Image (tube, rainbow, N blue to C red; front, side, top):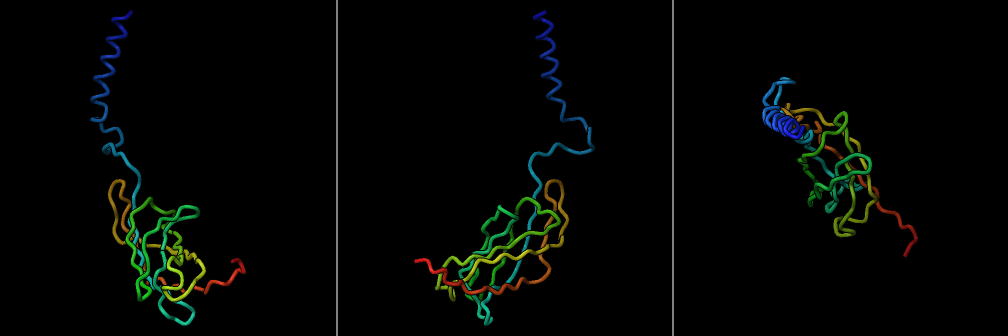
Length: 149
């Protein structure tokens, strides 16, 4: 009985070495997760149209935001970010004042939902490159005093 079990284990071991050589699904074995690259350009300003610098731009969905850029002195941001593909290629951009008064004032956090379009098809786990077709214009509201000291 022991010889039979050893023989069976040896056969299974050799089979495991050749299992990936078969073309069961007409493709190669791939390990990883789906991946897409997203590009967004835009400008952040205050209510008077003055550019606002020092605003953190985060990209994501619901409770998962990934910090990806900070606005420059002209209020501009440009993000190219690789991540897990978003449903319908729709995602949120969250704008957070991180420098206080230094960038033009204190501003409320704001979230904008955008939709990207495919610009280049991917291959395998890379599902492609996407871009928001127009520049995103965001106007931030000044932070109101909450009365807390």
